Image 1: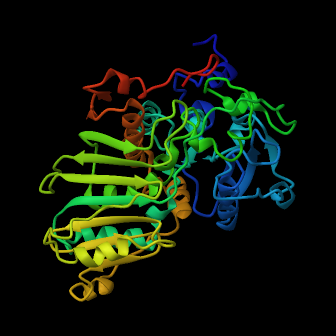
Image 2 (image 1 turned 90 degrees about the horizontal axis):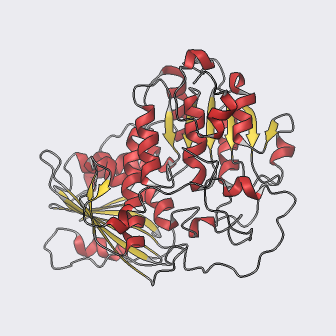
Image 3 (image 1 turned 120 degrees about the vertical axis):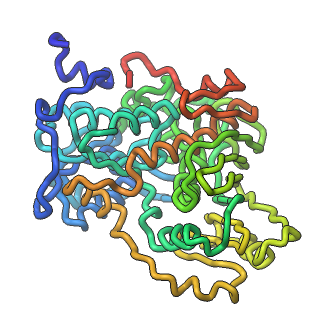
Length: 452
């Protein structure tokens, strides 16, 4: 250990923990003091994180992006990049390599916001946490189940404030829906449906290989993934479609829509996972997928079947089930366009609840008019939830302990789909008990020079 310098530790992913007092960790800051925040990935969603934390009054300390245009983590829903981010904040020092930024600016950083592609989430986050830095990491928390577990276990018992960036968790609709369900308003819930109409996938590897643009460090963008020739189908727009870099639509929006049932029903780890979808393509995700999860009893709460849908698929509800409000709910669940393209639907013994980003509906409507009168204390913004935790040592709502478990469950959907089998999950052993093929997707091999 004495022969390892800090550069070697960071380059290797740092498989040892150095005490925070040695590294000058951020610690808990007084409420009046600004946080010095470094940003890894500043394009599109990263830009949004920059602007929000700037509006919250924090100090933008450093920008890091492998793309000099600032568009490392560009999301499909944007058709342009915020090219003026460097003009907006010309005094913020810039880096390309997050490892160099952390090494050189360690004493000047309190917290790190990670908005890279999925396959680098764990690497940037772990490097920052090993220095004792607070971390806000976009969803999904990691690219693999192994990485999500490692991140959640590392932060246990440490005074590091963590948050996954599924901001709807702190929104009024999610907060109200969770409280109504926990109150028993719709009775016991044993069936949940979550959907997102869009999907990313179905591509085939491109045959041509254009030159790498001067503004992009392709080797750093690839990071721990297997090297492949540059192509714009990977960066900046469609990286979520590819197994090496993202986790398809469920890896993205599942962290929002399945977050609500996890909170409202105290879900933990699933027992079985089974998928249906479009024909498989070896290297890319499918352009539609349905995933069935089964969860065990939790104390007095009944077992739950949760089904995820994407690519335009929606639940086909049993209208003859006798559940009050099921027919009304089916009408709403079939609606297209905003806000119905992304929603979670809970079927209880006394009624049905549908929640979107900004709305909660309870059926039968006449029976549950009183639902709107139930008082709910709304939290601060998702960013405030995290920055408050950085300052006072509290635990943010989607800290890595909670979001690590949520992410593992979501990624089990991609594991089952890639294996092409119904799988049985042993959470304690982090192992699929009935399929070695599926176990091969729990943890990946990293490119030489990259270790977690």
